[in-house]
Image (tube, rainbow over all chains, first blue to last red):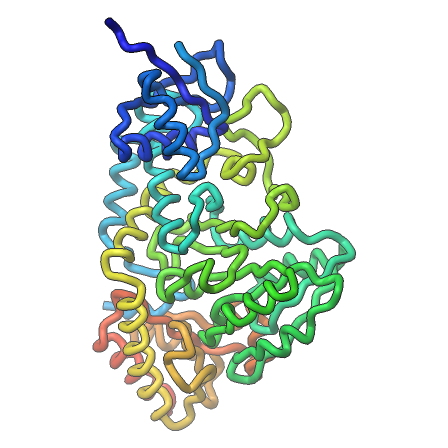
Length: 74
Length: 383
């Protein structure tokens, strides 16, 4: 069965790019993808990851002081 | 081969890794960061963020988002001064400042900001107690350069920083002469705003620099100097308030930032304490040599540990401009002469209006280069 995907949005691509590095460091599989237009017109990129990793990702990013602008399950 | 002793204007040569990183960016990445979502745009963004993170680590800043890029220290200083100071408030500064601080302050003065200038002594030393005495109830900010670009004198930034904290004030530091060659830690040194330039002792390319915004600065009270496209919140015609975008409008100098990132890695591989140790040895050689020449007056501190690389001197009977021309044409010594954009510092040192000759060795200056320069000065002074 295909793993359900989620996205985490950020205010700026600066944060999205730093977030990717932090999550990869934490061993959380993720990638930068264009922000689905349906969700926001904010920065060009967001983080896509497995829905099951969303909580761990949120905790790692909060610890790194990176503010999230939102999240959604695809 | 000419001897380049103008590293206080801009360092040269640069570490080879700087040019390599810039060439790699231009040839292999090229795209605009933060505007698009394709792989090259993301890669460009990674280069920018890696440099930001490198600088955060370098300056002891806990949050990389609070480092905003600017084209040089001057722009960063203007952002801080223009962004924070309102009519009716007061600012305390020293008589050793560069025009990058004094010109924006004089303009703000005409708009109702009160500027108090504390005079340093004739070697450029500033008394922190005198700074504290200049504080008034309306004072909101203290501005200091960490070292004079004329005499090289180190100013007591950390002491003044602690005074600022005691009085609930912010401290803005201009690190154009120090960043990269002198250890800086914004938390330890009690610096709230650190303006840095990339092209001097940080060994990056020109057109790079920025402002480190400490945690004590309320960014709601720091107006942007420039507003425009950031790639974020594109539906809104209002400037975003989140960092770093609030202060980074327009396409950034990505090629330069790539070079700056490589420069910071180069500095970290050697270590600032080691770079500083080498600089002190250069300054001791230069000072000892110059002070021994009859008719030569060296300005600034007597102890090399109290100064940075810019070393100002004069040759009796020879104007700084004539000395500079002859050092270049007859001896291949490249330096800077005159007032160095810091008229107040020259008044303090007693070298106004003619100014001084300024030698500034850099990381690639050899002891043989310095001997050649000392010999050239001795030849001119003997005439």
